[in-house]
Image 1 (tube, rainbow, N blue to C red):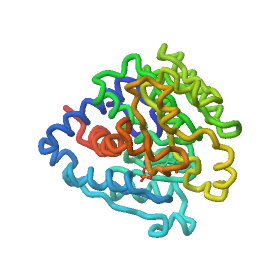
Image 2 (image 1 turned 120 degrees about the vertical axis):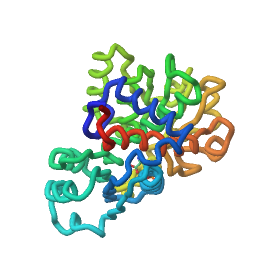
Image 3 (image 1 turned 90 degrees about the vertical axis):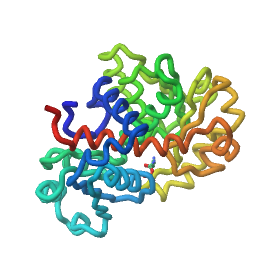
Length: 310
Ligand code: CP
Ligand code: NVA
């Protein structure tokens, strides 16, 4: 793979993504074959926000590949005391072989990548969450054998997860519809950018609409995420009111295809964006998606940080 970083799937070709999926599939079925893939390598993990899945999957992934991961929480490093992102990138590059970062401002991720001499992986920013989209599409590919003809409906906040699912969809040729309440639609710049990528790749552009029922009609996948993302806690009351009618419940699921699956990046809030009956019901594949984080990220790290193939 020619890519140096993973900031967004927008920068990746379909072939790049398929290369990650191919290696992830091999790593998942024969993990023992890759115990030395990143031997002696270290990943720095910067977390400006909390995490369960991202932290554990990257840390465990590095261990399983023979490498080591350093957890750098927000208050543990000098970043929160005024050391700049470029200086942090330059210093870490002298010690480690890769940097994964979870940040608020997306600019921090692009600045890290600009100033680091080692690969930088976006572990979620306010704008984008590429590792989640990789895990989501890998899960669907494994389940169905192919993504051809797939339709995914995203119901809820037009947030980082929604944005990255759009980029993934246009790269992989997946049809996508998004339903969000007024004022909480996906970022217009991202919608336009995804549409441009779709045009380049001759794939369907994501469609943004206001009605959840309309969005999920004929969908193979119904996806949702929290109404209040990390950093928006003060807006949560207003958001709960605005998102009324956007819960993914069994009635909404029944508007999708009969064999449709339910997905969520997690953490989930039962009774808010998803009803417990759906989250814990037979159509839910949320924990398969969570597990996929490990496999796709191991493949990604090996492709970005491993020895170049000769
Ligand atoms: N889905 C996801 O990124 O989970 P965490 O916030 O627990 O890392
Ligand atoms: N949109 C959520 C995703 C969490 C994994 C957030 O940013 O908090």
